Length: 640
Image (tube, rainbow, N blue to C red; front, side):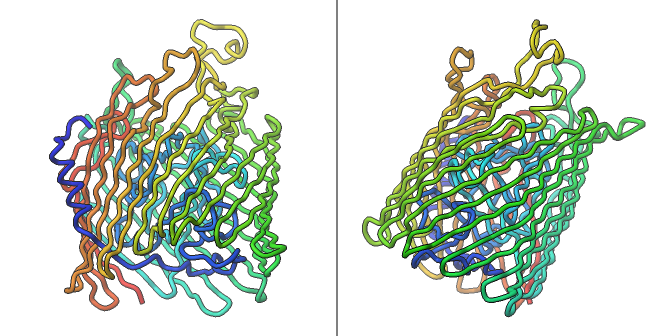
């Protein structure tokens, strides 16, 4: 961790861990679709869907799953979702500037596109993106009720993209009206408004956010501020038609404009201040039916996700430069049969239609048909489950995926768990059909292993977990240069094309701690060691670290509810050195940041404030791109 004195790291660690904080437990999901699923025996803790596609108690899976709920999101404060995700083990993030800029999330050494992202169960990856990646820069924290993260491959349930993990983000439903407004550094304005009703057969809510900031120069060498403006609307509803049958629906719309910097056209082609900006419009939604009895659970629905990006250069007479459109539609069925006791068969079938187009590329489309089954025993002393999936892609053919996981309750609330999962990632439409596409490219595949011992629940009085993992990936898709080559695909793609070019391995371990020694104190910390290296035989990068994957990362936080109603909290994040790319030619120095928080309630009204990056650390998570220095914000929120 070059560039930061060791004494500062020791001070930060001690200040976070010694102080013993606290707060309330995560709130139960308001719409109650989690609680009304087949319970699979008695269980404690959160109910999640990332393991099987249907609600499952978190202590009934052998897979590594973490949950951050609404109370914790409120305590962290602010619109920046990256500050929430930094508490999750195994997570590394890179961002090309401030809030609203391209934000990539990598789990356990995987690439950003190896993480399957769901919002209210809808797959939201950008079908027009080169790698089919979701940009977290377009998602603000104000509309979010909970975040579920499964770390590891789980293509048995989710199919393509679930290589390094699965993240499900659930939109909030407030039983009443809630609002907040804050103002701070860089003339930043942020407001949220939500309302809903949870009564009888109906649970429905609508939430909106607005964000506007002058920002700062995204180019670390620049001086011109690059701003971001976005408004976002989400909704989620459930209505019980009968005691066993409900209709469910959700939707999200986001429209934003983001300024960014480009590259100097002259050598050395450095990132400089420019007048470039982009407009991104996203909408996604799902509607379906949810049926639950003691024997059978069914969840059938239709989902879509659409992303449109347009890029402009204000310095040109005609500002519009180019644009992309991507769309996914999906018809899906998840089911569970519980024929006897703790035995359950989870199954499902999906049909997906994807298409993309751009200013430079002709429209292209593909379809995928898939089915899966997962047989499990979920007992009081332990669980075991195993399953298989088959995906048939209209462009490259079929792919099988297998997986298994189990857990054993040793003594008291200590349990041993283990998981094996296979993952695969279908080539993106851009990699198949763009001007640099290769119709013969094959899907990426992986095999992941995980073993852990844990005590308690992350949101309980005491939680301790230690896990070790390894993932081997093959057929990684990369760009093959055609420099000096005129045969084969290079005859029609003189600049190069996408092909299966590499192999990689990621391995490491994670340590998680959380404690609530009293009703007013809570503390937590995570440490992640991730070694992700290139294993492409014969390549001159063989053995090099993969880009933007720091080997060491520590996150720690405290919260204290004082006797005078004032609540105080702090977050610290320590990240080790890494490299910008697999060539290891450009280093990214490690860094440390500390955020301080406070809030004071006055009946239904609460005043709050925070200081981010207290020590004004200068750092980069993507080479050449700046991050915010010391920043301060104040705000108010209420709920009635």
